Amino acid sequence: MTDFYIAKSDGSSPGGVTGSDSNDGLTPSTPKATLDAIIQISGDADTDGDNIFFYGGTYTDAELNSTNNSNQVASISDANKRQHSLIAYLDQEVIFRRGGSGDTFAFIRFFNLSLA
Image (cartoon, rainbow, N blue to C red; front, side, top):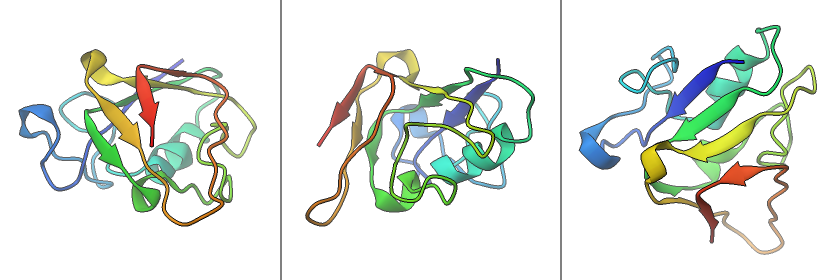
């Protein structure tokens, strides 16, 4: 199992942490900016049940869409169908917001997250 981290790319996450897909996403100080970037690297690992920690903030379609899962933002499974847990980092407030009518979330498990 591996822990991955995601933060807002605009520096609005608590503590001013800035996510970037050029980061490795493996430590709280080097978070990725998008879920797709995490899924791409987690799919290379030979583990199941990775944890994906989200820094506080409101995450929208651009940060949540995964090319491996079409519109299913996170049943979260990677290309090898391994499921992952979505967790709010340090119990920070995390909101997932989809745009457009008819868009839905497809979560298997998540912790301390809000859907809007």
